[in-house]
Each structure stands twice: as structure tokens, then as C-alpha cells.
Length: 437
Image: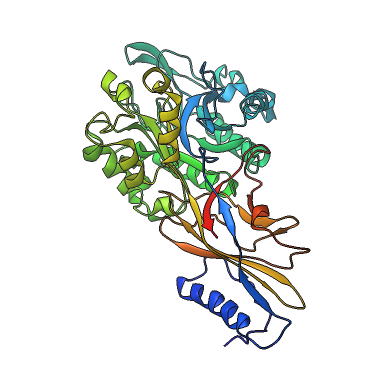
């Protein structure tokens, strides 16, 4: 048992709930001790959450006319591989940097989705591969439009794609301008060609290559969350749902027909096939359904377009963000902000204790996540010059964790407590709620 005057030991990340009362019991016993060298008091702390948090909320495309708003924290852009690759082993990321700087200038972070195939367009396969004698694309109708499909039998294309993500991760894995990266194959990189020529090993990568691709990304990204479509659960064309080693990888999921009429019948099964607890470690997001005009028009209505509200569905699927580029047509920005604030994490400090010894001043905070998903990047409670030893990353909804800030110089004020993270932009802030007198 700890002596009341014994210096507090660091508390490990993911502290067991069984240990939570102990730290506060130790503080209480210190208050009741006879030694004048130890004092303990409750720390007054007032803080509020009044905006959409970083890496959460409704998302607009980067070129939307109303994108310069604090009702969102994220902007979306499709990217082509040929915007970066200039030759074999040659890379020019200046276009990507320009996009990221533009988005960051509005204090927003980017969601980038790299795609090869888009209905009615040529592929974004770099010219030095596309023009090679052994590379043969397929041109066929998709969505009623003449569409170019990649030649996935080509070894150069296969190797290029692996090399691209190695280079991309090397450059951007810790870049706060990017919140999430989405990737995949097929139409819109959504892991399917439901309309057009779907042929494994030709217009769509083989199962063997898909496995190699996913493993490569998991090896390269340490900090930046990467995501694939829930349609990758299709066991006819993808190996993932039937392979435990692939399911163990830390990819997140995006769902591009969220709130659709058939969502509970089809989409929900795909979410579940990828692991019911995947959201514990990797993000979920997507886009409101475009199956019909009602899906977009009523996406943020009280009962949603098909009887389920966005708030309820975000809670059920632990959603961090949702692309809603059409929503400014139908809803005021205040409603877009409100819906966005119902997504992702939400932190509340329920207890704050300050105690002092001859050797140190320490603040302990008991913190709950009252949101619908965890935070997927590292963030720390802090006072000027000092941070907590524990990260907010991975604190699940409904769970509580203790954060200690130790060896604090000078006097302590609850007004100085904040959350710091290298994963957000300088003008962004991760807020928390507290009402401690």
C-alpha cells in the first residue's frame, strides 16, 4: 500500500478502472495526514465544448463555396497518383502540399482519397507505366460512361502502388495537415466494380496482391489513420473478411452510402464482417448516401432519410466523420455544426485534484469519453511546460482514465489546463468539458 507521503508513481496508459479510486484515495489520505509538507485540494476547473472537434464532424469537399466555416473541421479531396509520380522512382509532392496548405489555411484538416478509376475518366496511372508496351488498360462503360480500368496484371503498376505508399507515409505520417487517408481499388477506390468489367488479376487486383498491399500500408503508417471501404468485406473479390491476419491490420473503414434505406441489411453486415470492435483502434467514417435525392435532402433531418437519425447511426457505428457536401443546400450551418458535434470523441473531466509535497506539485484528472468514438491520435492534458504521462488516444466511449501532470513549476490554475497534440493544426484545439467548483 502506498504511504500518503510517498511520491506518486507514473500511471500506465490504459489504467485499469480498478486503480482509479486508489489515486484519489491516496490524495485524500494525504490531506488527512499530520505532515505539513503535504497538502491536497480539489482544483476548480471550468471548461466547455462549443465547436466541432479536430478530426471529427461533417465534411465538405475542399472546393465547396461554403468551405470557409467553423461548422466543419475537415475537408475532402480525391487525389490522382499521376499528380505525384513523375517517373520511375521519381516523386513530386508539391501538388499535395499545395492542397494541404490551402485546406490548413482555413484551420481545417484534410481527408485524402487516392483513386485510380472514376466513371467517365481515364485512370490516374502515371504516364511512364501507362505508355509501356506491356501495359494494357480496359475501356468499358461504367455508370453509363466510357471508363478506363487499370491493368492489374502489370508488375510495374503493382510495384509502383506499393512504393507510392512507402513514400507517402515517409513524408506525411506525422503531418498534422492530414487527418485521414482513404485508399483502395475499383470505382472511386471503393473496393468494387459493380458496374463494368470486374476481373480479378486484370481490371481488379488479385487476392494475393490485395493482401500484399494492405500489409504494406500497415507497415508504413504508424500515426496517420488509413481507411478502406466497407465493401472490401465482399468475400467474392477480396480476401480480407476470411483472413484473420488481414483483419488484424489497423485499417479504418469508410461507408459511402451511410443512412441508405438498405443500410441495416447490407452495410451493417459489412461493418460487422470487418470486426465488431475495429472502431476501438481504427476510425470509421464515410459519406451520406446518394441512392436518391431524399437521402441527401433528409440526411440531417430529425428521423434521417429512412427512419434513423444521423446522431443515432453515428453512435451505432462509432462514426468520427461523414462527408456531406450537399448539406449546405438543405441545412443551415448551425445544424451542420450540431450534427458534426455528435460524431467522434467528447472528453469530460469529472474530478481534478491538486496536491503538493516538498518535492513536487501534481495534478490528477479523472477523464471520461462521453462521445461515440475514441480519438485515434495522441493527445495529452497539459499545463505550461508539462504534459500528462498518459495519452487520450484510445479512450473508449463510456470509459474513464486518470491523467497525471507531475513536477509542475509555480502555482497551478485550472484555467491553464489544456489538451496538446502534435496531430492538430496550430489554431485548432481539442476541447473538454468540466464544471468543477
